[in-house]
Amino acid sequence: MRLVVHNMLQCHVKGCVSNNFPLQLLDVELEIQEIEFNPRFLQNMLPRLDWRAFVTTAAQIGINSLPQDLPEVFDEDFLKKLHRILFETHIVQGKMICANCSHEYPVKDGIPNMLLSEDEA
Amino acid sequence: MSRPEHQAPPEIYYNDAEAKKYTSNTRIQSVQAELTYRALELLNLPEDEPAYLLDIGCGSGLSGEILDEEGHMWVGMDISPAMLPEVALDREVEGDLFLQDVGQGMGFRPGTFDGAISVSVIQWLCNADRSSHNPKSRLTRFFSTLYSSLRRGAKAVFQFYPENDDQCELLMNTAMRCGFEGGLIPTEDGKPKMPKALGEDGEDEP
Ligand SMILES: [Zn+2]
Image (cartoon, rainbow over all chains, first blue to last red; front, side, top):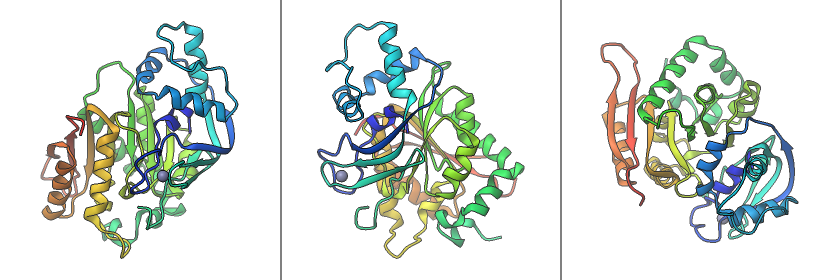
């Protein structure tokens, strides 16, 4: 799962509606999978991103080079850096944990398991 | 042959053997491809613009391959663990895959996707596979969380094989109650077992 998707994801346990984003990353294993740089798509996605959550998540996996706020103007180098982190960095193993209800979503072979138990659904 | 959704829940029905059979059957593949192109056509996305799409019940990634070819980025979800890693990863699709029961709803932030497609999946949600399953509440959970994950004005296209009029009505009514607008598009009649498509609009944010 690409990091960009993690930024779109919140806990969906029934009744868990506040403080359920972003899911905290634990024991994650990352992998870089290169794809073509597509600045237009990236620009398209930026407004959908929760930047603060992105910065927090990046810090959890050791990326501390992001500015606290999304700059209003940026150059191609900045976009390339974002491309690397958002679209090429994959979570391949680990857990995503909801800060509110503590549900753990395991990630295995790059695929998050979002299945809930009967009483969570 | 009886309908697959009457034989077993999808995660059981699409076991390893069935998943492999499904992806190696060329007739199924070409029908799936045709339905995916049709769904994309109905989504009516801006031309030459890469979109961020959701593929509900992405199965083995047949539809995902087409989304890749068309230059879109996508997230696919499926309830069958056999379908996802065994087959989809072999196929090397570009999308991000999730193991998910869409009847439990989905957790995407509001306004994430430019559109959603679903090929031959939502009829499964009309079944009660477990005593705790209530099709109506599962459908409500599905449509409402999907609706909120779509951007304003985004469309969702569901192709499905309705069993009867009651099932059509249940699906339509639930989708409408969850905010969708739109309607049913029956495919050419006269041919037996032809699928029906359901195109729906997410016009406004809730
Ligand atoms: Zn939660």
